[in-house]
Image 1 (cartoon, helix red, strand yellow):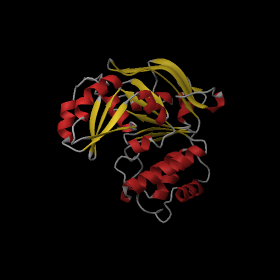
Image 2: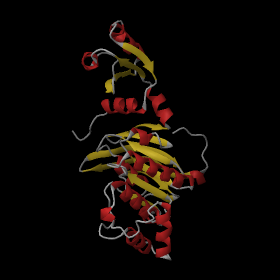
Image 3: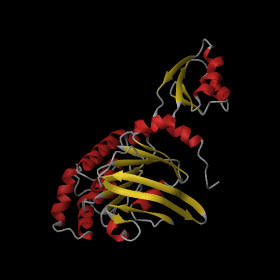
Image 4: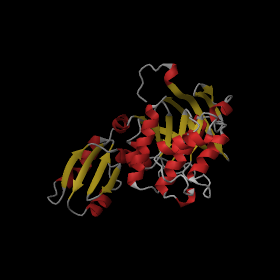
Length: 314
């Protein structure tokens, strides 16, 4: 993360050297990270690469084998119970009661957390998340987008200081996803810190900062622009010709770290610019192909990082 001096009061999470193993396999290795309050921090990486384990350790829901740190001013080892009371957790799988109405679910959550005036709190949340008119509809009858709103309302009802979102918009249509992210930004503007794991590049670009974790190792972190710059990728967009054949011809050539189709074009990238230029020189003279140097996208960086990540479970 790009850092000038950060006031301690502005830090939501600060950890160093976190490691965690399960059944002899290291899932997270020597991870250090700082997250400021009011930050939307996105976690990207392959499936099974330690994103959820990392998030749970950051907020005291899982005890690390080694390392230390604080979350919301509390020690992640000694004060886990205090941290948990200040965290809202929205899982990928809808976890509210399908046979209770929207109102009943929210009132239940309010009472579970000992909130005074549960009906009033539920009504206010229904208003906030735009479920007016659906108060008495059973949760199980809601569409994916409406269920998502209800789940978000339920986990923010007790006014947590930290919100954990585990791939929250999987299977939700683009309009509902955009509305969901508008609400997340509104909550962050009010001071809520958000940790979110996602595979969607457009969602990653909506985060204030991102971290790329591959098989337990933190490979890149910072703003989207910083992560792209850190990659040191040189990228060309190629159009025309037989791009599938071109991709096969470029595979494993010196300097080629990635050749991936994007719509009707092919993105060709490499970290060693001199080697990349030397390899593609022969192909650039072909009249059926048009080569245009372009800025690498976050997806280019994501694919390139995946290509050089070693799966520690294989």
